[in-house]
Image 1 (cartoon, rainbow, N blue to C red):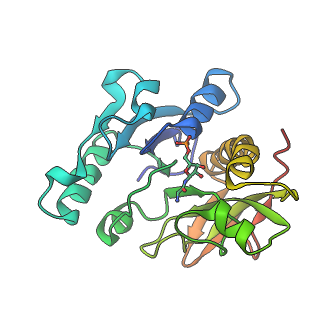
Image 2: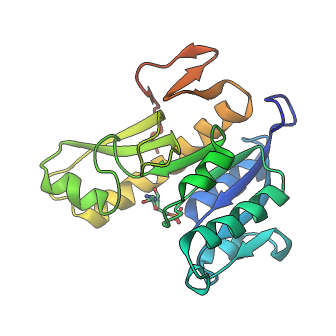
Length: 219
Ligand code: GAR
């Protein structure tokens, strides 16, 4: 892995669906808000809209179902990611669980954005679960990826209030633009070498982060 200096700016993005978080990264780069380049976009869904957001030379996809077992797909994905020499790998709406071997290979530079205030609501249907629990606050988290699902150290979060007549859809819609800003802010910290994973925790500017950063990502 290259050290965290001015060249630590190649980002590989893993995405399974529409790719609005990928688009937020592309926009931030194009507008000079993020000093980075997209090294490649990788998907387990060959038809994912996310892939269409970048030129063909940056796309890789394979249908996980055409591989004999989970580890075979993960190994192919890992080789493809490695081939583009990314400094950071970002799961941005990547909906397939990454196996332990994949995580080990990229540990420390593997991030995920998750639509809940972790450790609440790991996994799916986070908006519905927040409403069902009667939460007055909801949000999103960016964390380092570890083999256990959505269990890695959280770097930063953004919070929004839950409104009385919110549905899972309205909650998701209000959260999404904040998610995008959160992801860009965290990537800027990571790419500038200010954030690192250490053991089960996060270092910010060389000091342990005891609680996740709470970022103001107001629309
Ligand atoms: C985002 O809301 C992201 O947080 C979520 O999927 C959506 C993808 O949107 N990720 C997860 O739920 C991961 N567990 P996008 O494809 O438009 O970026």
